Image (cartoon, rainbow, N blue to C red; front, side):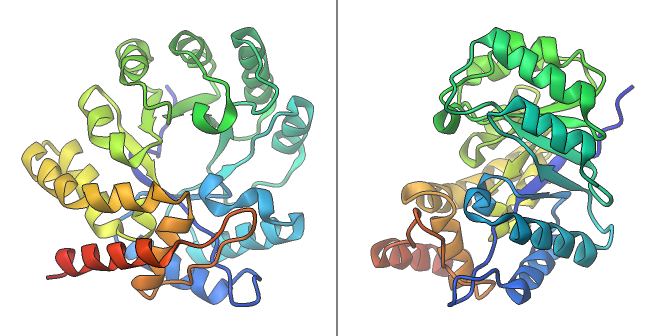
Length: 294
């Protein structure tokens, strides 16, 4: 039986930057407190939302060490380790030190556009060599490759694969996975807007972007649903719909960082090639905050 710590809400952490564009560790500390106190179930470091492609290797190491040290085992931590060079990913998951990390989140290979056979071979090799359990990450909008339901179900038989983060937005595909996956392999939403629909077909949680800024509300929504309080979950979701639309309107994490800035958690700066949210988006987010805090 696979032990699974990842039911509920994981937060795909942003990386705060200061005015000098360096990692702002004081704001990262504030963010972690905000998220933990808001009721998150686990943390996800160096995922897409962290702007990992623009972090230097030394910065990545410093960010992960800071998160581990400050978290101090309060919540489980998932670390993003993926890529389109299978050999390099295998080297990392087999050789790197992962003290304080509970699982690996590994994205489908991007740019190469492998066949399903290639995707299966890629993840089989990673799972076979990883020191830690693997959460698959399917996000076709970013990778140009979809992990099909059939491939996910085949990979789910591997003893070292414990979950699939599904951000395909294809509910039919998610339903097939939920209906046929082993009971100890979790279907996790990888898209905030689709969280309730995925929970309704058998999903067991989400790795969320908006929970950086609104953890109390979003984590509470997921907990309500999983506890059987469906009407409460739906009511909360309706309050969050506009926020969820707005934070992705100008790209991730520009929108959620602007929301965090308005909430005085961290600055709104992002690194090129991303750019910060527009004044128009900021104004609309500010209007939404006034409604939720009224």
